[in-house]
Image 1 (cartoon, rainbow, N blue to C red):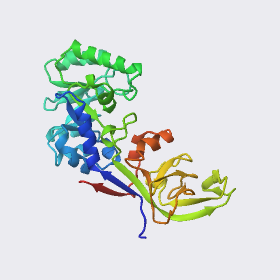
Image 2: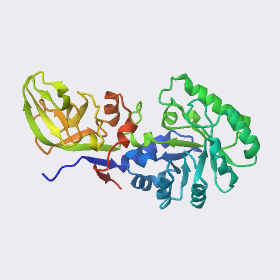
Image 3: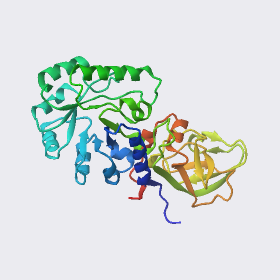
Image 4: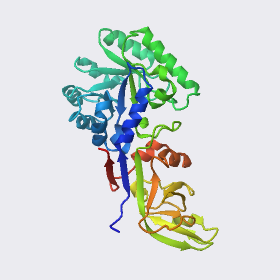
Length: 350
């Protein structure tokens, strides 16, 4: 066996299929923005953006350097979702035909230039970024009456359609829009909104986690990422033996464990619970003992013919990233974005 390495296999066709499915739920007039912040949620910004460029209408990014990388090969709309913070970056944005969000008073300098399309963000109840309706009214009357812009907000609870905050946010967003220019382009929909509130998709939807199959509550969207590594050691453990750092677990019977070449230095959460389910040779297996920097211990007592070199799959489209996240009180976003550079990345269908 050659020197092992944890591997991340990215299936671009799965991402494309997820986008096609999400687009099928939209009003034909709604445009689809792929949110690729945080290195495309850990999937590789340039490869993913290039691989889906033909089926999306634009890209949502946070860092201006990410936007510049995408602009090298795409002429689609690019939105800087947290806006701009200085004149030099504004000049770069104008030169490269980026749109920019404005979400606070310190960013109003962007309005001094007519050569950039802006998205005004209002706070409808998430209480994170955005202007209050009263602040928006003042900005609108002073600087926006004769200027084209997109009105936007962000939903806090769209993954839980029964949460009353959803209707409050929609009502406030619609009230603000109707009070000024009901014909202005509007955008509030994230992945949860596309799936749970299709009537609120408006002119632009901004989908991130749905592209990659990490949205909890929908089983049609598939996990596009396979995270795996190989067994490098197998040990027989006697009843009463303690395993790993701090001796966190004790064998209640004679058992066999596999040591897998991956750990928190690869991005696998150190705080993962015992009995978290992974897969070896198409059998379900359980983590047994504390995750260390470079190793995981797995209970393989009931897996036949398990051997050194076999692959241990932490998550893929069958044993999804959502499953591991749910078992550990985590979110799939965090698991996707914490994979470290020492993991070997392989792209399928590029």
